[in-house]
Amino acid sequence: MDSCYEMYNRLTELFTRDTLLMDIFKRAQGLAPFPYYIGAGCLVQTVWNELTGRAPGYGISDIDIIYYDAADLSYAAEDAMVAKGKKLFAGIAIPVDLKNQARVHLWYPQKFGVEIQPYTSLEAAINSWPTTVTSLGARLELNGDWKVYAPFGLEDLFQLILRPNKALISEKIYEAKTQKWKSKWPELTVVPWGQ
Image 1 (tube, one colour):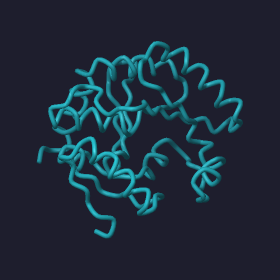
Image 2: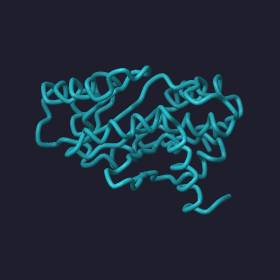
Image 3: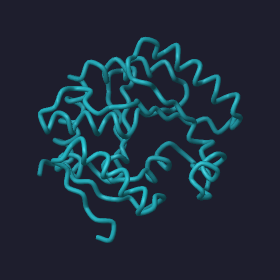
């Protein structure tokens, strides 16, 4: 497989060529001064579409954007950021989901039945995402440089391999996610939970 550097360049080149994603990346710069990433599905699915010859945007149901504000964990503060996001991303055909990762621990137990420790950074949040390929965040800096965070590397992504990240999810959630993705991208190889 290509070197990490080559995979990084290939990834950012794919993002640059994707009209929708580049629009999102540029608009997301308006979220500053908060640290943020565009994450997970829309990035991964853009790569899968390229590698499998599918149309750009195929299978992408939403755009996940995470930011970090530990200074104000109130719902009202996050709601204000969501309102700002609605203005920033007005006219985008795919829903944009904007969440403050500093407050995930406040609602996660009620939604998923699991207590979690507060995330100390955006990177700590990404470290817990359900698969090695979806543990991915990227942003386009104002100076044109790319910031990519991929704690498990990019090899599984470019080899179309789904592998569990057991930091937080259960086997049942992993199986549901992989079945959903495999129904849209049958070329994917799913690594069983027990391996």
